[in-house]
Image (cartoon, rainbow, N blue to C red; front, side):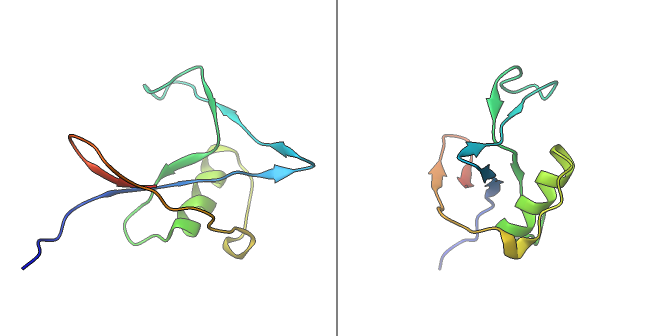
Length: 87
């Protein structure tokens, strides 16, 4: 019998317009502060990747995006020494 396992789910939004990608500068997060990256974050319980993406872009950048305007293009599974993640 297989045991269920907890994982950390994350979503990342690559907002592309006119061949430009929107980046944000990390500030006071305690991780990679001062570096640039795409809007991203962990999924809340019960959220789909699209729903998490839409919520994160609204929270972090203030842009309203509809779930059907997003497209899932890649899923990655990572197993670290302390946790397991699905990005």
